[in-house]
Image (cartoon, rainbow, N blue to C red):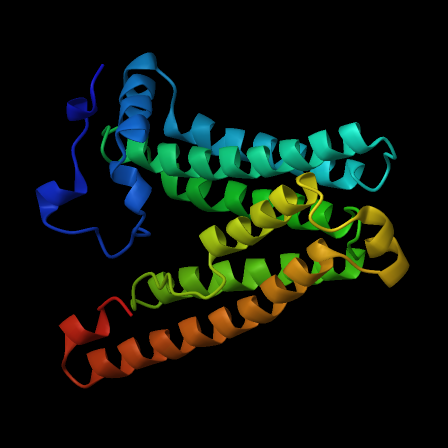
Length: 244
């Protein structure tokens, strides 16, 4: 099964305004995977649901880092957490490709596109809050902000301003930060004993960055939505629906 079995975004000339621009969508490995899934009978909704499983396992792996002492097991937990976060993102990528390029979308697709993402964010960020060298309240705060960031994007669509995907802490950036910390911890770039003496570690710093960056992202998105609505009211609908 080859990547040519799928339609491409270039067929329409550009990425649709209601879809997050993702460069890896055009990578051969993902196009082959999406083509295989399209012809295998797996539904996009099932792929979306699998992202919650990966996220829950990632959160559990992060939580486990604060419960184990053996350095080998500790590193394996960090590695597993980082890998599972990326598998969650791959599931998010493939569900859309199978639904859109593969033509297997369903009426409940938008629901499955949103709800599992919120659950997945919560599993990962709350788990990260309980990780070694982390702080639970920062995990909870980052989770709340992540949900609000997604709400701001969805709000734009609901009021007719279109989806707004601007950062600096959109979903891909949040997950990149968490994965980066997992990789750094697995490589023992900062010792756990030092993090315990300080009372915080890399994951605490990462969650604080996600929290603050998420607030900035939400404000930017709301400002962009307002700009588009005003532009549309002033008689420039093309400008009002434009990408930030």
